[in-house]
Length: 151
Image 1 (cartoon, helix red, strand yellow):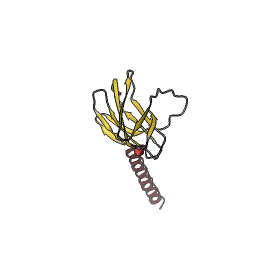
Image 2: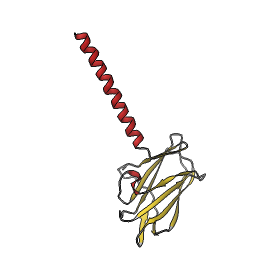
Image 3: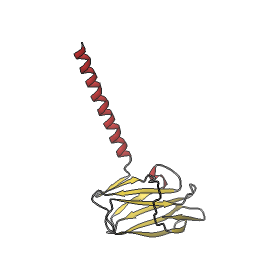
Image 4: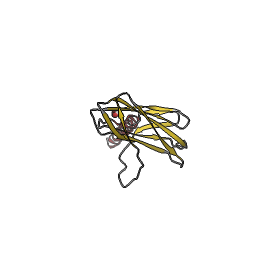
């Protein structure tokens, strides 16, 4: 009888382990917005602390397109992109291109699963982010008047 209980306990433990692994794998897949070659795009998380990131301030109107660049000249594996306008009533669209003009996707306010007037994504490549000038296209998708933002 004790041997049968031990076998049942072992089977239950295996089932729980497999179920837990499946849930973790589904969560990991849910955190991925897109794949582009070796690059994986994920929602950015608040890193906290006193991280200093240089932003560019600009304004945009309905149907207008603004281009911005970011130079990567060090060895990094994650490039954070943060477009923030803070107004949930207006909608901006972000397209990202690598230094060799590889398209890295089109993103709207809900890219990070939150409607808050902000698009925050991480571009991840374990082999390294391409050095050079990254290009960001900001488009006034649905804007009333003039919207200010930073990227």
